[in-house]
Image (cartoon, rainbow, N blue to C red; front, side, top):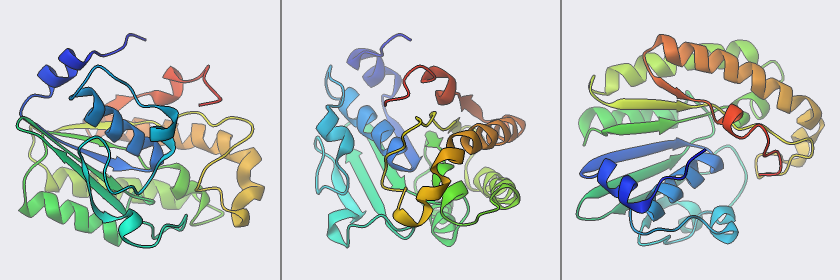
Length: 222
């Protein structure tokens, strides 16, 4: 897999408004974008693990994070934004693909500045934190979200659905609170099933699908 250079990223994304929606992995996608449009550099491990900080590489924390209570609950929020003369990148941390909070984000799209590119993923929290029988709820919520997203965005907006990266045998992460640790052995297989369904549906809705599960299949210690 070839690396993207600072020059390529800054030129390709010149005068573009990009939005990243998702969990901590998608926050890393946002941070990579912010860093790469400014310099020839990639995230350090410390930067990758940090969350909720007031500023990262000239961006600003808009809402949530250390401005509120830092926790690993499903109500945790973090909104970040980076703006330069030629780039605007925004990140919303979401823990469920279809929720009241997600609807408020889509309302922002309807009535505010329209993004040129949207990167989105929501899976691990959806299938582990809300219901023991996640399949039907997740499928229904995906349909509802894709319908509402299509209504909220102009046709020319590029939407990229990121499939969830593979989970290792020993799972670590803020989402894995003690109450759901018993789900860990099955979760990596649930992710495969959820990826198959969400990727297929995203393709039906005309979105681009980025298969991060395949790309990182040999990197189970990420």
